[in-house]
Image 1 (tube, one colour):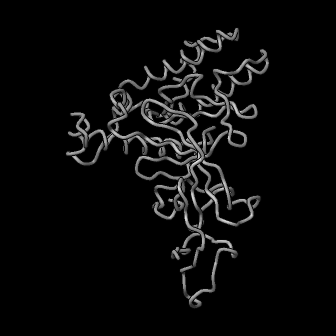
Image 2 (cartoon, one colour; image 1 turned 180 degrees about the horizontal axis):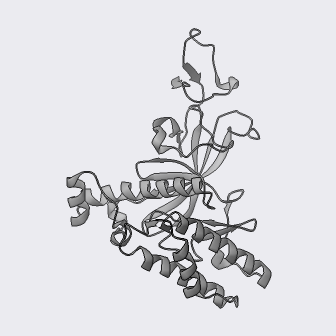
Image 3 (cartoon, helix red, strand yellow; image 1 turned 135 degrees about the horizontal axis):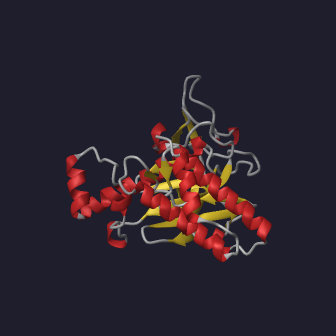
Length: 295
């Protein structure tokens, strides 16, 4: 039998045994994780590793919850995206906070990942420990491990900040070591399609373009740029554009290449919309965003 703490998180009555006493904070959980499962990692995180408040009602924070692996959604050069279900065993699935699908982005081990491109985006960012700075700069095995963690936390921080700004991004649930858990964007277990996959009429394309511009404008007003924006890291879910892949978000002031990256974002977006026969001027968009930049 496993002891679980319920000091901070609600546990449904059906998972509880009688308490030892009125002041007891320990409960019994009869279920045990099977193969491909683990206890929810939410209790192992500290407040700064959890998503911003107010938190959505679908978030599962119970210490009694179990995470179940459901497969790989997408593979990438530096990270793979997995689908997991976080659920409280035997709890009603239709009650918010009992069961949810999450996207788990896991940065690969140093043997299977290459972080050489990150230097462009990390200018202006700092590592507190001199040893870490040297290791990352030299590309040692330890340095690559540090970079993986740094990359995961950078993405979580970007998602958290953009959520607070009201930008259309997946809600960041938590970060722990090299894994970022976030809202899964899709229907059922099927991920939402990328913008690059859209074949839409002129009116729909125009609406999608305006949403992309609104996203870049929100970032610019906060002094930020996505840094790697393209139709391949923009999802379209029920007519809403959602930006993903955000670890490289750059500060336009502290990063010497910030405005170059912002310009590249504009070119990438406008090139795609132009190929869809929607008029778009990258230089005009860039000028508008520069005028919006908050310092």
